[in-house]
Image (cartoon, rainbow, N blue to C red; front, side):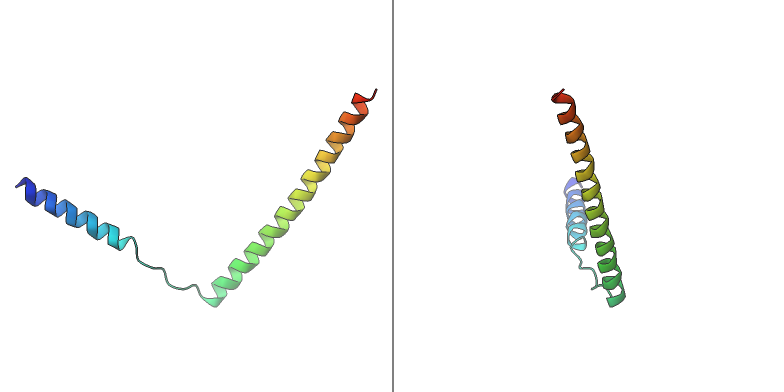
Length: 70
């Protein structure tokens, strides 16, 4: 009886593993365009954030240098 249960569980596990490897359909042109637009917006936001971070770091460094030379 135990061997039948084990065999059933093994078959179930194999079926789940094979089912998990199914391919997704190719995205539509509209979805691709939307993803490209979202990537562009994210890239722009990252660029602005990097510029703001650099400006803040420059301000902190200038303040530290001014304080250190007193």
